[in-house]
Amino acid sequence: MQTRSLARFHLLLLVLLLSGAGCTGGAAQETAVSTAPRRLPAPFTDEAIDVARRFVQPTNDLRLAVLEEELQRRGLSYTLRTFSGTGADDRTEGHNVVVGLGAGPPRIVVGGHFDADRLDDGTLSHGLVDNAAGVLVLLRVAETLRDADLQGVVHVVFFDMEELGLLGSRAYVQSLDPAPGAVMVNVDIVAYGDALLYGPGDLSAAHPLAGRVHRVCSRHAVACVGTPRMPPSDDRSFQRAGIPAVSLAVLPAEEAHRAWLFLNGDLSATLRGALTPPILRTIHTERDTVDKLEPEALTRAVRIVTDLVLDLDAAAQ
Ligand SMILES: [Zn+2]
Image 1 (cartoon, rainbow, N blue to C red):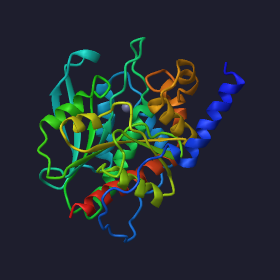
Image 2: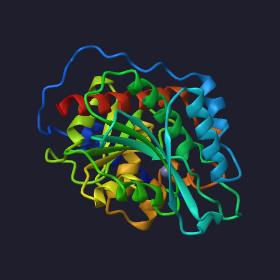
Image 3: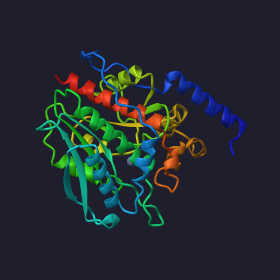
């Protein structure tokens, strides 16, 4: 239980953060971007929750089968890229799913993992926050971009074996022949909340993507919190290969600020325990369930991700 003074300290920290002290972003290099109105992706409804439920499966191969059905239902062409796994999770092969928009080397990769973590009791996590929600968002991003007038090539990629050590994204990057100036946008944990958490890295003006993320947040009137430290996800495979990448998550604003403190603050063990954001007590547990998903949060995520990709695509010309 917290002491009263500790609670006051938390409050002070949160007030400081909510007032903007924890936010980063600022001005990266400026490039003219068309301000012509864009057709926004349609909002998600409760129907999306029913689609998300389909991803609750006993194995990741069955999750892959659901993903393929959802792609086919939307008329989205895709390729399966098979790679060798480690034998963990009882699988020796993984399968990345790539929706290629345009022919040739991609200039923008936008992706997220579809696989779920295996729990201590041997069953597969429902994996709805982490990361079926991200998959739903990416499916709609792919549909919207398919109908957009893209200048360059975009790959929308659903990665396998993220939970086994980013194996799918590593395999994708190893066989990647990127276009000059290629960048990657990762989508992981976007199920509920009204604020965007993004990172990792030095998010000063020198960051190739942070300023753009902030401008998109402003456009959509969404609070945006940049975190130098971000839990590892598939963006790391790109960063290791020298490709600039940013990972996006949606959380309630208070939780996003709390996550910033938890990840970046030099906290005592007591404070660290008290400030552990609920998301970290949800993912990779039996609590990662369908009741956490909010259609409004998915809509927020899909609009931010789509707009960010369109900005990046326009700025590349
Ligand atoms: Zn994840």
